[in-house]
Image (cartoon, rainbow, N blue to C red):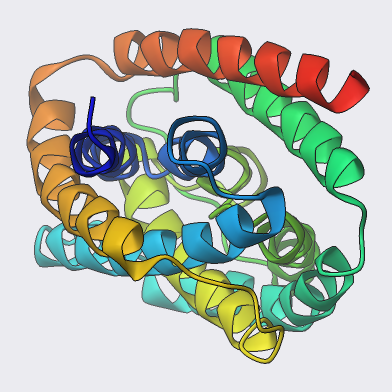
Length: 250
């Protein structure tokens, strides 16, 4: 199978997950770039930030037009994540590749666990008032993950927005995309001077397919139950985590 076809297929899956679930797809981007498209872990995390930024911004627009973005909550959450994202992105360029791969495997496993065990939101529940301290603490943790591993962190943002800040699921998914976009931009800015080689002939079609997939993902979310989508992506993520951990330990 040609590199172009692989890039398009992987990008479509990443975009589909981001559009439908507000997270999870970006965790698939890095292993796809490494194992399917031949990127090094360092180059894959930087390329993933480019892909995630463009895709999340597109998905954010589609959710914003439906009124599913809580801008004040998202701004507090994202602002707290910017300094940790910058610091973690700088640190990631100095970490040995096996360590980076093992860390990514752990995060992919955590993402799968979150998707398997996330409880369904109670219908009719009113969102709790947004507390700045809660938003800042959760946002800082998410920014660190985004900067270090090149993932959007929506699999952490959505549960935090639901359980910690009390948003309903649709609003949490839309708001998480605002947070992901801001944190990914910050982490990408921190990596601009690292001279990591980027293969734009792969990144460009991957990103284009992901952007188109994000539109389809939002439509899919309206037709298929959230738990069913989460279980499907969680199964894939568990397999990815196992492969990456085995690779790191060789």
